Length: 426
Image 1 (cartoon, helix red, strand yellow):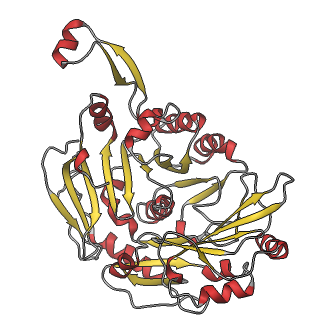
Image 2 (cartoon, rainbow, N blue to C red):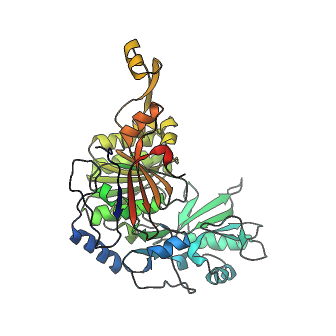
Image 3 (cartoon, rainbow, N blue to C red):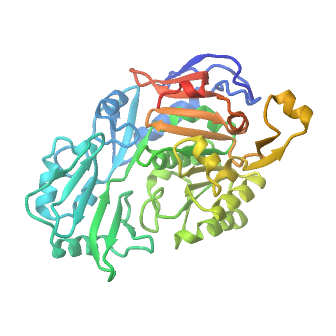
């Protein structure tokens, strides 16, 4: 696979888009995609129930690409005419609002920026506040403080919290996280809005056809889980792969025994305790014969080893890991195995002279578990690495060539090939 030639490629989100470059020799030139596949995909997305269609430009203006939603002033969802570059958003905001006190619910429904609502904070003895995407600071919802009775009402409406102090609302993607006192009493709740957005996968649709494992990294809130959810849908329903999601906190498939429709035909295995995620990953491979396994928030050595074991069996992996850049993963002794691991090697005099380096150097230890690593710098600015090449070059103290995938002012995907890593936007 080579990124030796420099080019800028536009990928339209429209069904009329043409993707040139035919090869399957893994040279990362976009593949020819059957127009029937694209048309079928667009029709499926339009037919989804309980969805909202809004233009990509509208989402970009709202600053909520990948996580946005447009709703009316009533808790029921609104519908607007789909455009050629539309994103379809599934949102169950009314279900989240129902667990809140009536006055807070009314205040939020009258808020012009409800489309950008990120989370609602309820802390005992403090003023309730709302947080919005792209907005810093606090915004109080009223001038009276949260009472224990209001916290108990919300707790009863949500149900039981797991060992990770997280709970959900059945049939939705919302996440409720609890803060407990030293006696185990819930004294605070973070009610985070969960949204399913279709259309974000256009950024990497060509990469999915290679069948290679992909690891996403990025800061919290950038949309990694949202992308994972849509990839599961596309791989299961369009590529007809046997997809199994290992869903530790029900963040991908939503709360309840029946997974959210946003994952399409993918199967979901719930994890009873976060410490058992690695075991459920292996169980998925051994018992259910998946072609693709998806796992969110890879964060322990056992999970990293489970990923390698799965990859060695020829199963495609789609995952996310803690870290913002490839360098974070390389320097993390727990997660570095995901990109091949790092070892110290002593070179001979001739080799050291030929490389113009010291005799003791760092080198990649093994083939990387993930063929591609994508840094989600922003919801619409992604840096794509061929993991093996980038790791080797970075360990030599140089800058690798990468692909930058972003959306332009018309909200079409632009792929900039062979860009110097240090020249990418922060």
